[in-house]
Amino acid sequence: MTLRLYNTMTRQVEPFTTLDPGRVSLYTCGPTVYNYAHIGNFRTFLFEDVLRRWLEASGYEVFHVMNLTDVDDKTIKGALATGAQLRDHVQPFIDAFHEDRRYLRLLDAHAYPRATDFIAPMIALVEDLLGKGIAYRGDDGSVYFAIGRFPAYGRLSRLDTRELKAGAGGRVSTDEYAKEDARDFVLWKAAREDDERVGAAWDAPFGRGRPGWHLECSAMALDLVGTRYGRDVLDIHAGGVDLIFPHHEDEIAQSCAHTGEPDFARVWMHGEFLTMAGTKMSKRFGNILTARDLREEHVEASAVRMLFATTHYRQKLDFTDEALASAREGTRRLGEFDARMSQATEATTGAFDPLALVLDDEFTAAMDDDLNTSQALAALFEAARAGNRALDAGDGPTAAFRSAWTRATTVLQVLPNSGRFAVAVEAAGESTWTEQSPDDPTAQFAWANWWAAQRLAARQARDFAESDRIRSLLDRHGWEVRDNRDGTAMVQRK
RNA sequence: GGCGCCGUAGCCAAGUGGUAAGGCAGAGGUCUGCAAAACCUCCAUCACCGGUUCGACUCCGGUCGGCGCCUCCA
Image (cartoon, rainbow, N blue to C red; front, side, top):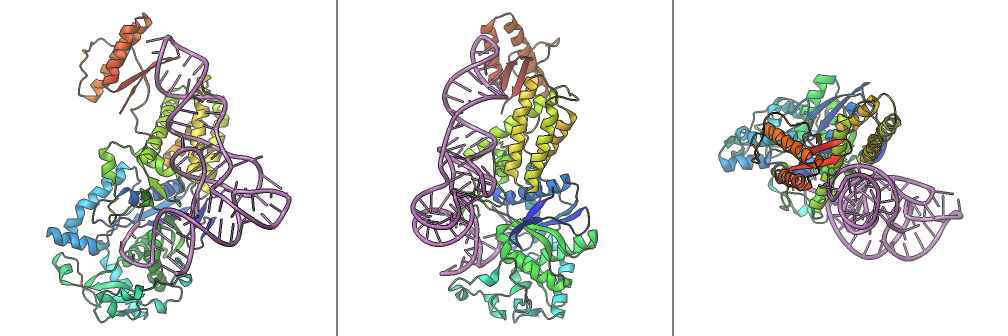
């Protein structure tokens, strides 16, 4: 059983192989830090996170790089508006991005290179392309890549099979007059006054200016992966589908023209869009939901991750409150089982033994099949159901089952935060509590436990009126009590 | 206009040439003083029309509907 991944370059699911045994270089296009990233952006990052986690769970060492685009029209415009220098203007958005991704449980990449920290390698790359005659200087002082001199251009997006939209030629912006061919793209933009004002211009042998968007990924990936693995080809390059053209196409052109390699990345992976009300989530449409919005609404990362995992990464997904609520309910069930199993006494044999094998096999088969998270999830839910049944029957989880369960839930990250599941109520301690719930969370727990113990006593005395009174008292403070065969447990809600 | 994707139960969503995973919601049941949780049972013939085939949801053609890219974009 081996991992198979869909490669945009070949439009096929193919067996995954690496350049070097056991290790993978993974480059993922990160956010342009001109604003807060929305959950559509994060859908892509989350898919990449699952990819990374699965590679690691499969035994690969992964070197993961995610760039931060901090110099482009939008960041410059923003800096201009606030009167700040570019790097200062962008810093809060970088900080926010990291906060958001931690909230969503995205693993730390090994490097988060900022474009403005890699100006020298970018300049070197442009010089090389100029020297090779594949790039040229336009009349406006900018440097362009001549796609006519790079025959392989268009392979990724199948440009040869396309035609430009009728009338597209009429839309020519100022700097395009300087191009030899309308399709050439800019490598280095000649400095304008606005760029200078915010500190977004650098000296280069071919003129003062700033990097074009595509240039940074080539230069940074080549630099970092080259340093780390001594390679100038990536194992995997991933991003959103909208980056296929022109971004990744142009990266390929620059990089391959520079390295002489036939490929820039061996596998190209692209995540589909998240839509809202059926249309692409985009700042331009105003249908934006940010990670911060979700956090403010106390939506747990697990629910978001569950929602995204129910749909394959290459399928569009429409974000709705109903779908999110449904996902959240699913995480609750898995979480209840997880908590229940964790508290159960481990067994060395029994019903959990075969369950471990089934879970492991099915989960692995699903993930190996181009990250089929929907099916992987099905394996988890089935394991939980069968596990609950086994627990009901008095079986204890085996180490093998726990390990399979942990592996699967670690990859998908669909378990809710701990502390929200049933905990057995313990005997009341010496202290007594009033009906007033304390503010301190730890004390709250002790308070709830004490009242739950009082309720249990009332219940055992068959004083159901008092028992129910206490239950509603606890309920008002967010605690739910459950009477099970094996005792009474309480759960903190909300 | 060019390229491409999608249309599966009330909702979400896998799958695929041999008679449809899973989740949410719903109904009934077990357990329980009651409730919750958990478990059990029930709940689709895969947009439509043709064709290929012993057999299609799965392949081909067409129709209708939704969406994306071709321009900054996850």
